[in-house]
Amino acid sequence: MNVRPDQLKSTIAKSVYPVYMVSGDEPLQQMESLDLIRSHLRQNDFSEREILDVDAQFDWQRLMDEAANMSLFATRRIVEIRLPSAKPGKQGSQALKDYLSRPPEDTVLIINAGKIDGNSKKSAWYKAVDQSGLVVQCWPVPVDKLSHWLMLRFIARDMEADNDVLAYISQHVEGNLLAADQEIEKLYLLLGPGKITYADVAEAVTSQSRYSVFELVDMLLVGNTKRVIKIIAGLKAEGIVPVVVNWALAKDIRLLTQASQDVSSADFMLKRSGVWQSRITMFKSCMSRHTPRSFQLMLKRCSYLDAVSKGMIDANVWDEIETLCVRLAGSTRVSR
Image 1: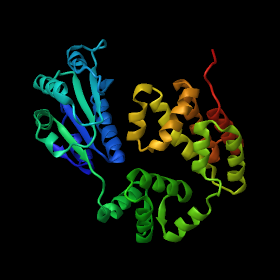
Image 2: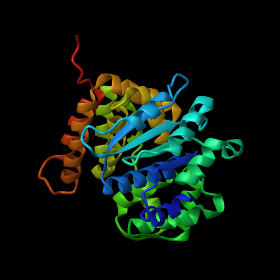
Image 3: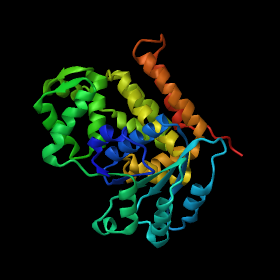
Image 4: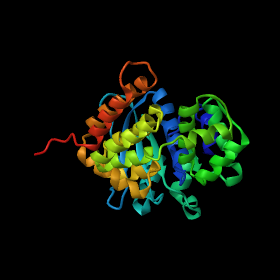
């Protein structure tokens, strides 16, 4: 079965398929589709997950070995193949066909692939996936449909944006759905639920500091502690809402937490998450200074910061922000 991302939620609950494939070159829809599939499988007791990253040296026998292996704890498993090129090659094509001819009962296969071209859709391995399971193809939202897409994203956050707001964001993000979603999230943090007009958005945008929050995050990633402290002082002086700073911190620390779990696939994971190629080096620089456990603790600290910034905990929010930022800009790895 072949479905669009917006059809997936209503379709997925009907069955558990032996294979799911999410492909395309639109990162946000791809990530959300994969998250929805994983959540559905967890609800159906698929609690173990094995990730196979496919590159030029990948041995496709590993897929067959995973199919043959029984879980140590007799639980249902997910085997997720990351296939950036969307071209498994001769060996991979045969392995996928063999796997789907006899899929194991306790295992579901998820294929996270790049854009599928016309020739690939005619291949035997693609037809085997299409006939055996669920295929979700994620395409960029056409310009003439972007306003409608934005309207639905606002509604999901209990916000009602007028046409001028939708037009402003459409022009600002130039079709980048990740950027659009981040703009909506930022407006939600600044303005809250309810109706918003272009005047509301203009006021929120013009109130942003000349010391950019995004510059702060970049300086954190590269470890420029002196610049970080100066930017934080500027943000505070300009009256930036602390919750917006914490949002930016939590967003990138969450990515660092995920990417640090498997450094070998960090580039792929960051790119799929919408990180620009020019910033991937910054992320990897930060990962070299911290352990995965350190990122987990810093992400937990962001939750604490969120409570402080909303007045739920009595503490100096800017002192807490500076403490977290200095830690992130520094290093928690022990020198040997």
